[in-house]
Image 1 (cartoon, rainbow, N blue to C red):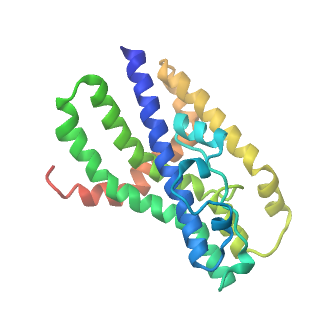
Image 2: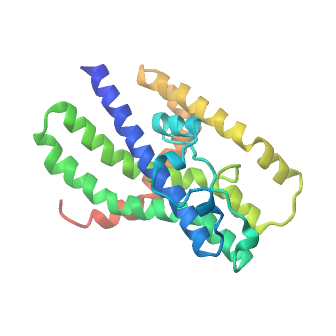
Image 3: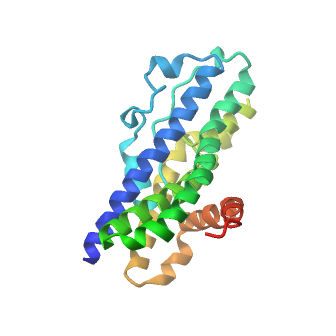
Length: 232
């Protein structure tokens, strides 16, 4: 039964990753299009079809660990009516939409966890409570994760938009950001696996685990505090 429930959690995490990533990438595409760039539409990224946006490795990492990435939305900044404004708005759109989605999904999580799931069979209880929690937590973690100035994340795009210089630091982040991200995710997966089997000390060196804690406890505090005013 324990392994079945673990599998149910993985499925819930995968579905949450599909929703969070799709909304994030669609937001980039939509804002870029509204700012004057038809490139996302040309490449069929102005869509809520998840298959248009997935990077297979990034999706698997996000489903298992809570951190990952999608295929970067292709844009041509020269098409923007206002170059720098268009770049900043497009780069930040995904993060903003994910945070707003976390704000809206948290009360649903509270309702399901508190009133619906306790009356369901164990498997469905675990599935729905995990699904809504992952939708909330991974929306926040994706916000925080994407603020890192590493390619192909949004933080790097914002850095690219605001800084026209192309020095050594920029080139390093551009050329090696993907490998740094992959290394952090592998490290987090190893640490979380050890923690699951009782080696709790590994949790202290889980770098992305600390990011997740920051995302839910600090970055998400305004959401939980505001909805917490309601006597659930």
